Length: 354
Image 1: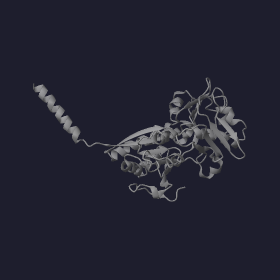
Image 2: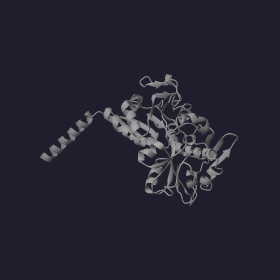
Image 3: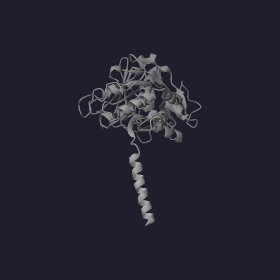
Image 4: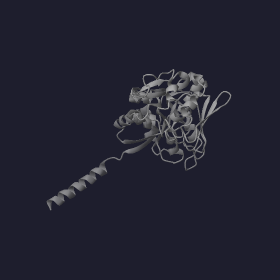
């Protein structure tokens, strides 16, 4: 009898304690996979400062991040992508279910990056590869090359751009084909025009049996393959490479897609998806300096908490977290439409956007 009374008392106390515990506000953040390391640290630091908010982060290829908003119509509070251009391309013209406004009307260019080629000391020809011969090494049949899927991930289509630009930069006719031709069931075509080139990605993109290309849905999925020795090299962002301590081939400014004075060179490459990837837009990805973008969707369920998150990101503590992870922020924040920023979002702004 006493045990039953004690048990009942325990249940009542637990119920009362649960009723008194304040409910945390869920903050849903969808971000590019290349942000997983710094944003995971950012989440912990932000929650320590704002215990009333529970950050729920998911990381995908940048195109997949956008699809969760525009095609799957999920309620997301913060969207961060490795290609800033995806936000106006896919969110400004699309309206949520209410039809009253676009998914977003502003975005912040939060950071840059550079393309590079990651490898380990155990990679084949690791002692031989350099900035002067990397494409020759990657073309060898016994070398396994990691590439993220350009249908889902920005680093995937940027990797294709690097190969297309490299053929002209090194005056190495056939470079693009030496690495990619014959590796896919349906080829990724490079079409040369007068002063530019179009790369056409098919709807069904599968590697052939025996291909030396290993493809995954996002660039971060290649990390474990590289660590396990299942691939020798991978096209990656420099920040991700340095976060994981890999060796890497540093690409020249004309190819790394990270230099502002090389926009003309980067702009010669365009990647086109040869199918309707999104419900309303058939996107083309144009070569330009890498710029990460972040925004709060117009239909975000918790815009006030999202504003606090962005303010923390650009605070001194947030800047330090990003810098320590080799991914420094642009400060002041580079916003394209400052007049559209929510009133509750207080950030130092760079006007106009660059």
